[in-house]
Length: 532
Image 1 (cartoon, one colour):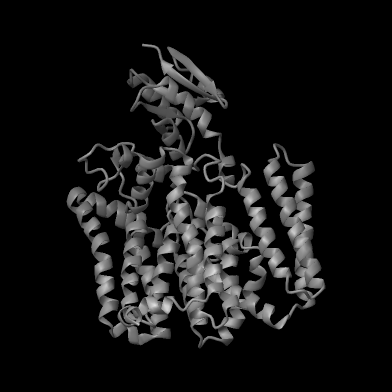
Image 2 (cartoon, helix red, strand yellow; image 1 turned 90 degrees about the horizontal axis):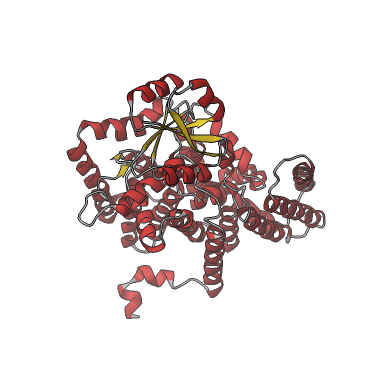
């Protein structure tokens, strides 16, 4: 009785039934296995992973007493793009497990895995029926874009985890206002991960939900106190950067990397407003089939907390990112918890009322045919077929087929078959070399990086004819590789004494470089030095 009187927040948590604790632990374990399985099996991809890993390694290598942890660098230059919370966590992972792909992805994959039980915990607070919370978390666990990006060393999975903490804290404040301290904590972590603009956007979504669902929270001292305390660390970090770098930090971080993405295209990543709708349509199958029914159900039950949360989160966030001029595929990742609740609510209703129309049979027949067609294509027509990918495709096609059979029989176990089949299929998929398919967009980086690292000294700058910067090449070679045009390459060759070029075979013949020596060749790339 003393425990309940003094700690009512925890007393409410203790009212979970044993079956609900079982589901929470089971979902958590399933998420940890799926997000951690073969995590280091493929190289780091370019851009976000290569950049994040490079910054984290320089923090890890910094000497005791150095301020690199506060003022991070990349290739020896100030890194001003994003706050360093995730980079700190990866640097800590390097200190424990060494520098490799697995330790690079471990912190972000762990945070994203934690978001799965948080989806369940939020569902427990907003749904009247336990089944809707279970189905929502399982949908979220088996959404391809969420799992795949969540396993990468990128920031978006962590953002989702922290915002779910914010929402869960708001919902728990129904029982005790002290739970609102989690709101400030979550928003502060978001700002320390991806900047103030993301914190303001997600904070606005949380505020709109509170205004619609429980506006009395806004008069609580815990609400405003938690937000003030939560914003102190990120604002302090921003203040330190401004004092250290001055206008350079303001221009790079707040203008170029933040607000300019709203009204201008960064690095030609410009697409129409419906770009993210197409991204959801492309990658959210088969759960996308249940989404229209979930949206209709939410509109009908718009006075319930689950509908208010799902509609506010998904609607405001999708509108905000669609209005931005710069479009990048991973910007849509934070919308998936809200879509999972919409889909989970629809599936729970179908489960309860056993309402399986012939439309569902037709849709899953179509999915089965498409999946088996994909199998035939990869088996007979694709070159360099990944055996692991083939097995995963067979598994997912079989799952859709068995699901169709259960739908024909009007059996509620169709959904169990679908969840299980997708989970096993993703395990098989992540055991393949194809789950980071962006690696196939350019030459293999690790052999070329090994060649560069073996033939050059530390801090050597190498110029390359490849048109784009490849952060993963810099990371693996531990050198700075700078793209340059043919004219610039010829100029550097004339002006520099100790110069190295990374060139394609045909480019090296076109340049006709005097006094050149081919050091080594990998993947049709030549490392060329100047004979002095």
